[in-house]
Length: 140
Image 1 (cartoon, rainbow, N blue to C red):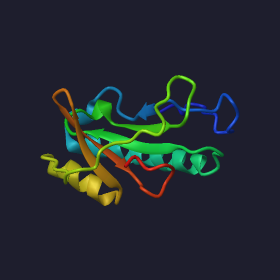
Image 2: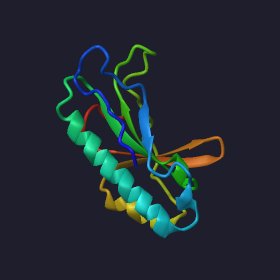
Image 3: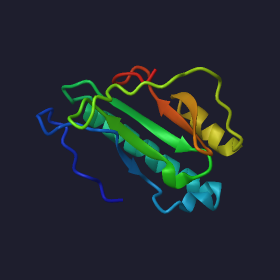
C-alpha cells in the first residue's frame, strides 16, 4: 500500500477534514475472515503509525477507526482536526448502548484492540467506531 504524504507540521495547510485511509479498498476481506484479518491487522498498523505522527502535531486532533460489520472495503483509519471546510470539529458520537457484532471473529478482533467501541448504523449498514479515549480529543 502506498503511504500518502501527510502534513503534520501544524502550519496553515496542516489540517484534516475526516481524512481517511482504507486497507482493503477492493473488499477482498469479504470473501473470508483470514483475508479480512490480514486487512484489519494492516488497519491497526496504520492507526498506530498515524497516532505516532499525531503525538507531535501541535493542534487538537481526533484519530479513530471505523469498521463495517459486513463490508471490509469500508474499514478505515480517520484523522480529523479543525479545518477550513466546515465547522465540524470535534466530531462527537453518542455512546449509549452496548455493542453487539454477529460476526464472532470480527467481534473478537475488536475486543482484542482494547479500544473503546461504539456501534452505529447508516442506511442498512452496521459499523463500529474504535478509538482510545486518552488519545487526542475523544469522540464521546
